[in-house]
Image (tube, rainbow, N blue to C red; front, side, top):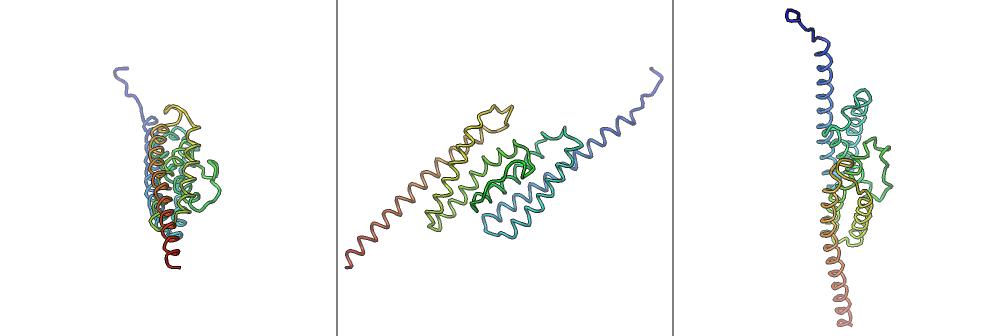
Length: 210
């Protein structure tokens, strides 16, 4: 044994292949995350064409990632992969909620249940962003509809009371969502009160002018 040489050629080939797959997964995941971020920005900007184009590209990336996982399922819990799935799902869910459509299911998006739930939680923050944009345009009724959707999402999240070892990050995301909702409720109450005062003042002014 002391004079023999251990042949690790096959071993190195095995791990080289694993490393190559990992690098490909990271490249696709990071590219997908960047595109999803651009899509979310375009969504809030109201650029529907840009959103559609970017989501189509990200959808292809997600499909490619799933193809990799079919042969290498051990990478299914890789952080970059989950992040890519989450960011993609977050854009789709936020877009659907803003447009008042039916939410796609996990299978429709081809993402993991963990990524889907995380995306749903983070969509509350994006909906608040849209909510504030509507308030700035004095679209109170539309703002109220978005607020109600945020409340319903949070009610759903409260039903998913699992430890982080089962559903990573759910408690933190739920806490963040709760604080976001508290601020949104305050803003909604203030906006309704201000509109009520404006209407009352308008009625008073009309009576004085009669």
